[in-house]
Image (cartoon, rainbow over all chains, first blue to last red; front, side, top):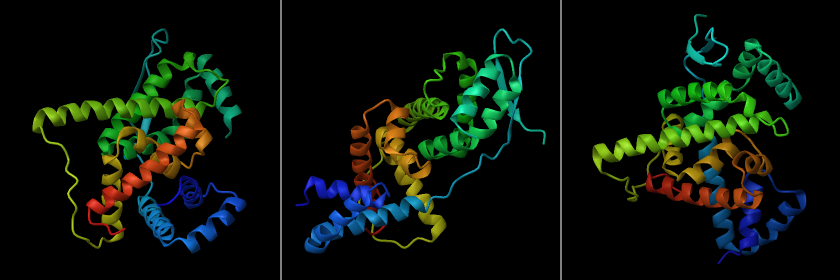
Length: 82
Length: 181
C-alpha cells in the first residue's frame, strides 16, 4: 500500500512541479518499495502517452468581421480571405 | 505580450477599437482552439467552439474584471463553451444510440506514434469533464496548479486532487485500449 504522501510526491515529480527537496524525498521510497517503483514507472508511461498528442492548429484562419452596428457590439467570424 | 498588454488591449477595444480585439483573437485563437479540441476531440467541434468563445468574449468584454488575468477569463469561457458543446453532443448521441462506452480490457497492442496519439486523445475524451479539463490545462497548456485554480475558480488543492485522479483514470482507459502500462 502506497501512502498518500508518496503518491503526491510521485505526481509532483512526473509533472515537473516538485522542488529539489521533494525529488530527493521520493528517491529512497522508490528504492525501498517495489510497488511504489512500479506505480511511478506506470505514471511516467502515462505522461509519455499524454505527450504523444501533438499540438493542433485551427484549419480555417478566422478573420473577425464586425457588424456596422456598434451598439449591438455584434461580431461574426468567417473564413479568412488571405 | 504580457497581462498588462492584454488589459490595455481590452481597454482599447472597449473604447471602440476593433483592431485591438483582433489582436487578442490572434493571440489566443490557437490556444482556445486547442483547449476545445482536447476537450471535444473533433476539429469541426473545436472550430465551432472557438468562434463562439470569441463572439461571447466580444459581447461580454465589458464584464471582464481587469483585476484578473485576461487569459484566465478567456480560458474559462473556452472551457465552459466546450462543456456546453460536449453536453449537447452527448445528449444527441444518447438519443440516437442509447449506448454508453464500455471499458472492456483489450489485448495489448503496439501502436505507431500517430495511432498512439489518436488513441490517447480518445482516452482523454473519455475522462469525465472535471478530469479532462485539468489534464488539458496542465499538460497541453502548461498552466501551474495555481493558474488552473484561478481559471476554474477552485482551490489549488482540488486541482491537485483532480489531476492525480485523472492520471490514474487515464492509465486505466489506456489499458482498456490495449496500451500496456
